[in-house]
Length: 254
Image (tube, rainbow, N blue to C red; front, top):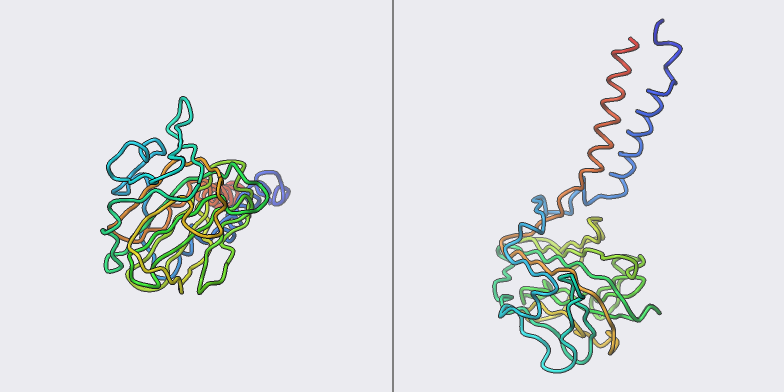
């Protein structure tokens, strides 16, 4: 009887709220708990075998800059590249290491600066050259889109002008590639019809407007496999707090 008056008291309510919040967060974020198809391995992009800050893109032999137009400038006091697309793009010189027999992963952190009218400001092409394992992403102020069989498909809608957003593409050794935006699973895609083994960024497609401006925090690549993002601790913390609270109140008021 000691616990009967506190079954719905503050400790129990807080525990239930925490447990429900954690469960809802997990349900709305399948990248954390339900990995896409064959991609079961997880890896933080900081542990990828190729790491580039925005500043690195302009001063390393690993990247070939645009043959004309803007190469970007580093934002003062940071390693962020402020880049404007014109008629060309940056080319990664190690893309020959992309191999669907191993799987591969690319992650970048980007913020769209202009235009803010929904036009595409920036594009990325990544792939191992064996169609359909070649992927084109266009960054708009309000969405990220891809092209499948000459048809535009929305990957994720959001305000991509507010903060830096991370986008990850992972191609496993079998099955379709998966895309995450800010660690949230956005879907698996196939049917891309590009035919080159490359990693490019800039004005890489006809729908990328000339003069589109973005800021690039980093680009990272891993040629050893396809990896999902590592779950953020916050979701696990909510679940743990909820479960612990329920167990604590059960034994305390039993």
